Length: 268
Ligand SMILES: Nc1nc2c(ncn2[C@@H]2O[C@H](COP(=O)(O)OP(=O)(O)O)[C@@H](O)[C@H]2O)c(=O)[nH]1
Ligand SMILES: [Mg+2]
Image (cartoon, rainbow, N blue to C red; front, top):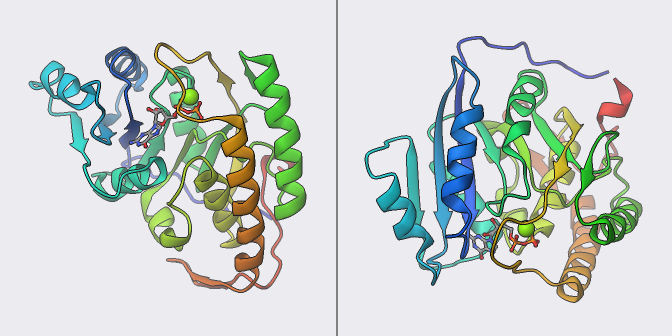
């Protein structure tokens, strides 16, 4: 049984978190697209969390949006890294409703209203390439990622289909109540740790279909070899540690050693 959080109509505030590294060719377009899809009645801030990109992404955002208080560039010069910058954005977000997305235009801002709508009910809404209606422009990448996700699900014993997407909406308080030190480090593998802990904490988690677009301009920072090696080690470690961890959430303390039923959209 899914426990539904009653929608609170006064809660129409959103923090969008955009981690960037060398995204000067995409970031202004992305921010403009995001602003255009914020539903009427919603107030949004956009946090650009930049790890001191050599291409000047931070300065570009600061200059372009200097008169726009809703765009907040954050410059990180120490302890850099993708997952850590997302944690930094979540920590600094002003509002409880957050959306995290990549800044290279692969995550389509057009999904934002749907993420917000479903997020009125679910603790975490994940944009999935593999839910019916989801897709990815690069077919090779899509198939490889699907196969890899099957393996992840075998290791982690979870039901979610896309554990690497990284496009999601959630309650900031709920995320901060998870063991964040166990989640936010490394690269894209942080996302399956986040989903894993959210499910083990008994949060309501759902996938909605999302069409991942081709990267805008610039080049990807990840490579397949690094990804497969690092992610597989991370998944094994997570399975091992997850068994022996308890997590205190705002609702109660959940013993992660006790198997809980995973909550996904497929049960609704
Ligand atoms: N802040 C920060 N963002 C990063 C870092 N590495 C990648 N990103 C951002 O994370 C997102 C995904 O990275 P990308 O290079 O597209 O990797 P891919 O999607 O796995 O191919 C993009 O928005 C990047 O700008 C990093 O070290 N720090
Ligand atoms: Mg990308």
